[in-house]
Amino acid sequence: MHDRNRYLSTRTPLLNRRLYSCFKISLLALTLILVPAINVFPESPGFPDLLVPEDGEPLPGKPTPDGTFSRSRQDFIICTGKDFQGPAPTGTFSTITWQGNATDDVGRFNNETIEELLQDLSNQKNREIALQRFEVGLKADPQFYPFLYNSARLNLLLRNFEEAIRLFQRASGLIPRDPGPNMNIARACEELQDHRCVMHYYRKAHELAPLRPDALFALGVYSLETDRKPQARIYLKEGLNQFPDDSRMKIGMARLYLSSGDKLRARVLLESIPTETLTGDRRKDYDLSLHYYLADIYRESRDYGRALNQINILLENPGDPFFLENNRSKLEKEKEVLERLAKAQSVSD
Image 1 (spheres, rainbow, N blue to C red):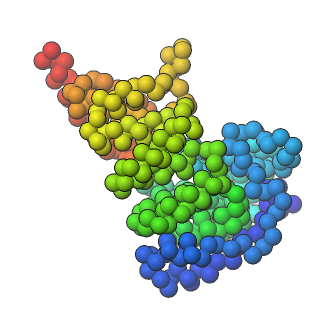
Image 2 (cartoon, helix red, strand yellow; image 1 turned 180 degrees about the vertical axis):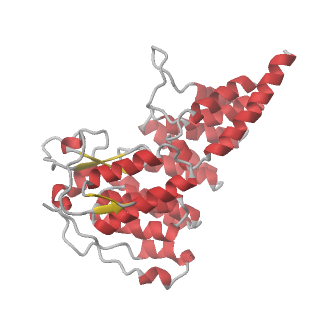
Image 3 (tube, rainbow, N blue to C red; image 1 turned 90 degrees about the vertical axis):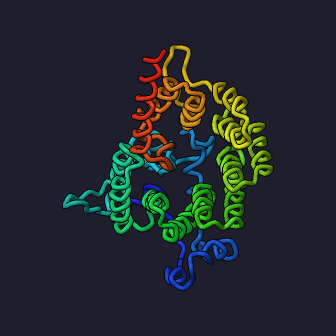
């Protein structure tokens, strides 16, 4: 049985690769809006639901195949078994050869690649090796959604925006109801500084997943980082109203306060986010970037010991999504500076 029969059969939309070599990157984002990818093959019944919901529970009344997909916190696609539980089924058709070793277990190859990457997510070499592995997998099975989506993610992280967009378009054709490709195309458009494209794809992602906070949060942060503070306030307030327990919305509002010089209000809001359980263990349901912004606030107030504690929490989690956009080695240098400042402060006290 072909691997794709296990994950339900799909077909990749026809894309003319030469199109991208004929235009400058500056025109690429506009093309995405005016000429969206078209799936010329019929959509397989039920396939778009394999990523929904993303909390690992099957949809009521919706049968799932032996092989399913789920999304990691770092936005990579992981292969799972029936009903989003357990290991993925072993493939029997596609053979992947990597560094002289051959395997037909596409799910395991995919998941092991992600596991190795998350050992140090910000490391450039790790990202390049992971991309090479996914590209080898994609050659063996060009229609396997995890290889396609994860290859696109790595190209985006490595700033290969043109290739990332092309691959995400293909992925969107395979699972049109997955908001992930649209979210990532919007991120690529941010780097290309195409405001119209960014808004189009974030809004499209929100339409596909209105019960998730991702697109609203992204719109708020994008508006803040492009100095559109009134719009940022609108998106983040709406996000807080709809998702009051989402730590990212509170962090986004705190960043908005910081941008306006209201450090006290930002600090109070950030410190209100629960980070520990009743037994004192670290919670897993909040965004660790909280510690980055608290560290900055504590450092400016010369509370170097508390700032150092915040940096240490981040460094203890090298696979956290925080390191998708932040360099671990840079944070380690920041830690060294804070250690010297904290030591000097303790001596003077």
